[in-house]
Length: 360
Image (cartoon, rainbow, N blue to C red; front, side, top):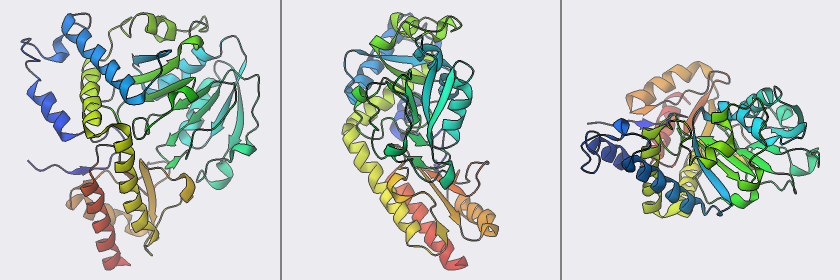
């Protein structure tokens, strides 16, 4: 069997050992005579799987006890609505920081439920930077401040957690969670789709401070009320059971690699290798400002866009797939999440050099 190096932005590459274990257990999980997809979500086998996954996630994140870890559905796009439904808490407005397309989607959806103050935007730089914290026009009476920690499309990442004072900080971390150590206590709420660093599409993680629960808007569907989900151990409705199971295997894999500190070192090495090759080249350009370049989604362009098709065709012939940039921005994008090995990035760098020698 030949596996490619998959640079997809999501659903994304998973650790091979996790895929192999899931395959081995497909028909019979631990002698139960059935696969995880067939189990009742309230039966003893699956409740043990879910409890272990939650425990491992809390351990990896070192999440304080007064934070609830929720397994939900709908992805980050659904959370763009679910967050204001739950987090406005009697207030009329929230602050949003605009750093790209995913931030914009969050703003558009939140406006359906309350007033949105775009407190800062990097639109004037073409979304190649993070607005300096001192330029943010925050409202101290806002219900929360929302950021997207890593813009998957534009390849922009916050270099550090911004200080927003006493107002709860809410972060979409779909493409950066579990890529490095994280101080959960600096956030009121963290959410993200699982299909990048965690597991299959269909699972959404929500990490929320307990004192922020219980004041959802009356229009909030019961299944999306964080208080209800937390009180029912993420089992108010049938959760995405198989995705939770695979996520638990990924959590075990991360722990076995050395935890989030090891993931951070691994991801930094990959990003340094790839950005270094791009910056040293006369054929490619990486548009994002170096101080806020994503370690997860490396965006770049060929100086001559007429060569894009040939670059992608040659890459695919070498087993380097899903390098085409998002349709809205073009160019190239290499997503190098936790499970992407250094060898995959080295293979891409080798192709960058080879292509430049032939076409530079």
